[in-house]
Figure 1: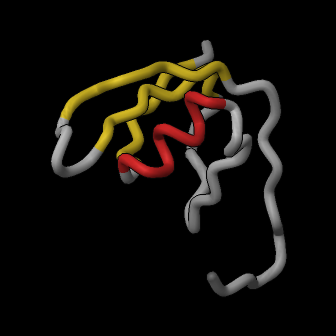
Figure 2: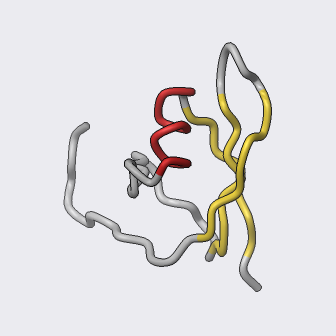
Length: 67
């Protein structure tokens, strides 16, 4: 069964995601379960859930990679 996860994102990035400018969200740790969508929580100063996005594909870098 696919699940939804909640992730917190800074306001400037949320606006770019909603506008379609930002198409990828990079995370150091991949989700442990198979997910179908993410619930987007916009951080300070908004501090609320603002959107939900469908996950089309997950790209994972398997080698040691430092951000």
